[in-house]
Length: 468
Ligand SMILES: NC(=O)C1=CN([C@@H]2O[C@H](COP(=O)(O)OP(=O)(O)OC[C@H]3O[C@@H](n4cnc5c(N)ncnc54)[C@H](OP(=O)(O)O)[C@@H]3O)[C@@H](O)[C@H]2O)[C@@H](O)CC1
Ligand SMILES: Nc1ncnc2c1ncn2[C@@H]1O[C@H](COP(=O)(O)OP(=O)(O)O)[C@@H](O)[C@H]1O
Ligand SMILES: [K+]
Image (cartoon, rainbow, N blue to C red; front, side, top):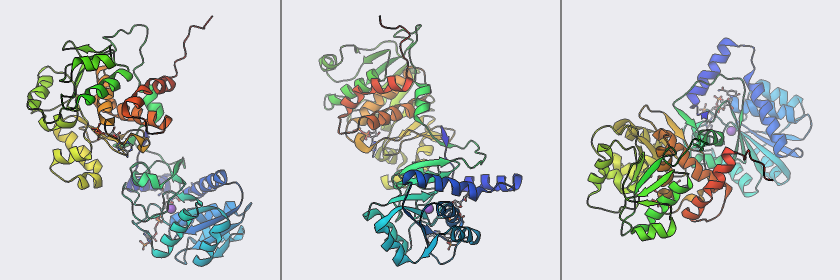
């Protein structure tokens, strides 16, 4: 798990170091990492550094000084002024100053551009000359190493403005919101998080990593049976949308539920012809999934209320989201996409897209449930205000039916006894990780069938019995 720091939190950590360890030179440490990554990206050839007026430019200049010892380096001082000591160090090491026109001209035979225009102090957007240079880098497919973040992004937001398109970003101590929230995250390329000795406190925003999902996965052991692994009841699908029932079954089964019961309105023959291990009808269960593919069913409220009356933790998806029972929904998981979250809040989808963290926190705080906001970035909020982002995946999963599979996966994890927030993070992450390992237009059910091998690889449990 990695903490996500806002720019203010990072600056506070920096002040703490300045106050307690005045001997530590953070800029040199940052510059060394930028130079190291630049050499990794392309070990030889010309480097152009776009240098801004602040400390981001300072990082770029000290990196230039290190690189100029073994390769040609050009400096474009965008505002004509720059970190003084950094500039002296770079020039003494042999870096050459150029103007904007020469910098653009030099792109033709340049190995790497270092974007050290702005970092934490970046206001959204770029001045025209820098925008032209950034566009030329992109058009000529030049590798761009961004210092801290691609200039033009706002460190604290997932929104994009005119910015560099980095192939690599070297950031310090911890990711900032722009590195993990789409669409900004896509501008960052590959992210390198350099440890420069800052003390990172726990925050209420973090992002899960593959290792977390592997460590948390509820693998069976010799004492397991179908009940101890968790029984999940799926009240999903309808006569109009029978496919959703199949998709949620596929998700729950391939995530490893001990038993899947089906109590929805889709024909039982259809379910059994695809998934013969599903048990039709009600019975003992540890969790339920409600809403996927219901359409505008007339007794939604009573079906959701039923789960509350029976103290059954529920994954509430799609149409069931608009029939939430009164009272706190402790232990429940709501799985809206941006449009559904907007309807729950009575705001526009654009507002949810602009303020995803605030919106997902608000619904969790007021309902008492954990809330998984689905989409390109998947946020899971807890009533305490803590938000965990799921592992990121490719956009291949952006298609009808992925959400129905995801609800089934989350139901299986809830039934296995995981807390609702964790079931949401793990469900969204395992779907993303599986899509990442199987790129291509697989249908949601085909992709779910590949989940077991992804899970086996993640948990890596070799058999202790050797074949004879
Ligand atoms: N904090 C830490 O722990 C560490 C920080 N470190 C480094 O320091 C960086 C932060 O440095 P920073 O605070 O000096 O701000 P920075 O990003 O250089 O930008 C400020 C300048 O840019 C200008 N400007 C901004 N946007 C603009 C725009 N759109 N268009 C045009 N101009 C624009 C802005 O202009 P102004 O607002 O003054 O007009 C101002 O002059 C951080 O990202 C990291 O690289 C590391 O060395 C080690 C650890
Ligand atoms: N840009 C994207 N990148 C990756 N995954 C996405 C993206 N957009 C949506 N998804 C995935 O698609 C699903 C959307 O769910 P939902 O809209 O409820 O689908 P449906 O109701 O059709 O099954 C989620 O599982 C989410 O992971
Ligand atoms: K930058």
